Length: 323
Ligand code: UDP
Ligand code: MG
Image (cartoon, rainbow, N blue to C red; front, side, top):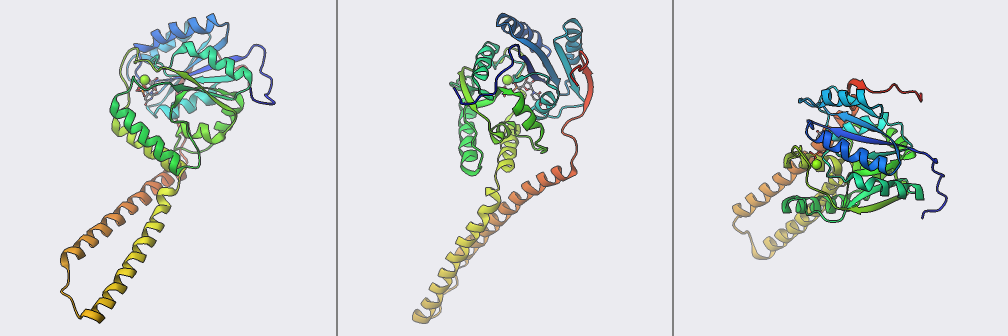
């Protein structure tokens, strides 16, 4: 147990932040499962659904559910802003002493929530679900995820645990810390690690999706990975300095070698193939490094515009009485 833990309230309010995108089928299953677990554990809770621009009947369904149960609140974003923005919208509106971020598709088991709360009561501020095995993922996803975490942890100053998803409980102090981070590029896993606080993982097995289908594809994951690395590291920008220095040094040595060889052996026939190879190689390296600068510049552009992270179209549920 960590030292000098801030005392936890005797009857804490737990907020579940649930981002949803076209999850008409999953919502009822989720609701049944989660309410049973939380009531069973005697926890006081609110369910905060963030609709991330669903185009099916998800919002109407959530509105009906919220009308029937005062523990349910709904924030409907004006369009699809992405799961990261939806989670931020939820964190901005959560009233709980602790907040659990959980997917609606039951891949994050609600049964684990009492354990997360227990660790929080022991004094941890961040309790993340740590995936014991990734057997529910395809081999390709496992492999690419491994590469990503390897690359991230090598180039970024912030360490993220390779087995953590978004499923986690965070203390109010962490929520307030996250709300102070102004960036638009919100790579939540990285932000959670960046804010620090006492953190512990709880192993769990990630189930198959209960209903509906995954909203991710490899193109989205690739962009997600780029966002993650460019938000937390400037190594990709700086590496070209060193590469350039090494190439310059090698070409200088080669030039010296040619001078000496000409002095000793006389003039040689020019080597067009090797010239072409060097030219194309360097051209490629230059375009690549320009592309990397472009990645950062593009992100800088988005940050500088300072547009809001998300826009809310509708809020449904009991009025905020605390503020
Ligand atoms: N989601 C979202 N906005 C998006 C994509 C997904 O709010 O743009 C929600 C989705 O409804 C679900 C959670 O994020 O509750 C995880 O999505 P999904 O299950 O598709 O991701 P996976 O589990 O395949 O990584
Ligand atoms: Mg899922």
